[in-house]
Length: 137
Image 1 (cartoon, rainbow, N blue to C red):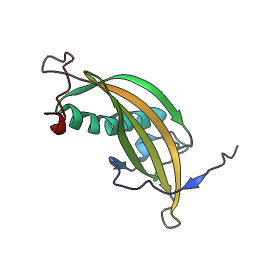
Image 2: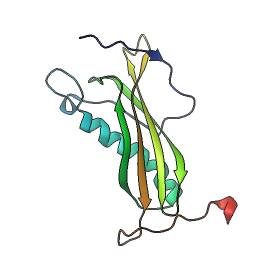
Image 3: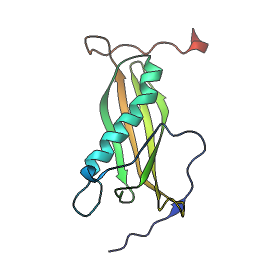
């Protein structure tokens, strides 16, 4: 079965994370494991959450996760993470993942999109309030 690919371009701005899956991240056919992609999405989403929390965070929910296209060994993945909502202790982040395939031909496809929620935690791993933003201080 051939999956139609809608090619696109990378979003503006710097990606939060870039990584290339290796053969150990895939099955014998070169298809990257979904769990490996999920782990990378969690890392990418945590980066802006840690900055906003000014410290430790824990993942409390994967609100949505959609695999739009397969990922292959050798794809260059770019993860774009953005905070979409904050609460007293929580930070909700969207993560979009793009694959650059056949890099000489510059084929770019959106492969995954997810929304995750993190909670700021203290040294005992208990929820703590987010610090005020500099403009709120």
